[in-house]
Image 1 (cartoon, rainbow, N blue to C red):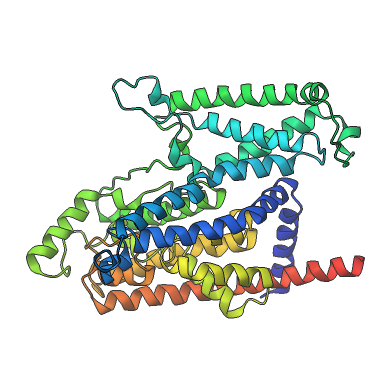
Image 2: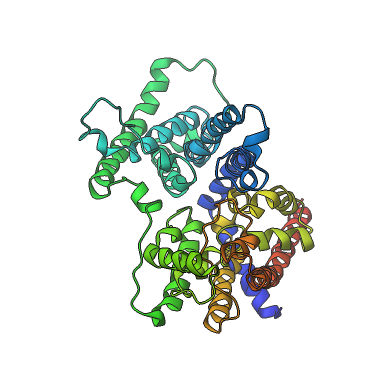
Length: 440
């Protein structure tokens, strides 16, 4: 790569590396990563094996030969929600705790305050209008998991900032933990930042629940429906949709778009045609958001995540990155990539952001060419969410080998696009480690 371009990228990467708020988020994610890793494997077992419509269960009919399948299913459902379902609450606590300057008397209080504030931001307004015998959840459960990561980071950083403003500088520098601090003294020091934070986020939560049906979840998990006029707009709309979706993933706004619900009438027409004719060749809506993105541009999850995992395992020599890549390979193969997104610092990594945004766009273009010139049939059959990404197109077309070929082609090209950025990431990390060793 051109030396001038490399130096330019290194300056950008280094400037981002030294941002205090990013260092705070990365430290919080590092602490939380073991729980994230356990959670994604629990999700894999729950959704792919011990779910009635799971991919592996549909193939091997596990529910018919494993005794107590329903018990296992319930157990992993509980375990899945208990780990992945509340990950944002834990992240909020850690971000706030780390964001507070090392004042041992307030950092834990800040973390607890942030957790309370995060729950206020996700209050369920339907509780006020609820009538009937069945209880309504007071909080939006969907936003307590990965879909609430962005809000969790904002709440945590804001809480830390408020506590820093109320803590005198001389006390912030005192790192010794005083076991004998009286209740009155601790309360006196904490009451103002706690009260300010809770009032602020209660107010913001009230506004969010008034403006959005699902509160802050309306910002991060409600699908946006697209409508298109004619085939001429579909390619541009698909590129825009996949690029915007991946940008939001990078910010922590996970699951913003739901491509399965876009142009659902076209999907039904295609499926009816395939059932009547025994093949998806010649389906009336060959090019759509669904046929372009679902089966071919999200292999391993947003950003063609499986290709990044392969590139890391193949060529990266960075120890931390290789551990993340190896641990994430199996879940990414089944389109579960939260560990990769969080662990590899994809949230705010300027180097890996470039291929993360570009690879799905390239895949959309290749798929559009293949469908436009009838090199393969469109994907019309529904497949499980945990279907391996490189098989989704093949199964969705009813077993067309052309679809499998283009899926593998998209995956290979994505690996090639990721590879130079993974190598650059390793190179920059080596430079930083060498500089640190020279200083010591």
